[in-house]
Length: 87
Image (cartoon, rainbow, N blue to C red; front, side, top):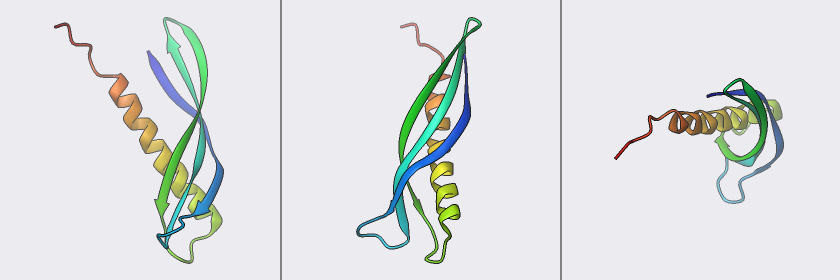
């Protein structure tokens, strides 16, 4: 099985209501999964947060949110690659 991130974009974002310098949002991720030669596309919405400088540009905040979501997806992929226990 292979799982690849093929597209990622910020759907929405907002400043955190109580923590200055933090933004929260939703990131849309498109993944392809290949199992036994058959390919399936999956669209996920990942909730993410990112800390940033007070003078960060909207593009910097988008990038920080996408990087956070990509790390979440990498952890998910890592947990799927674990060998199956036969106990």
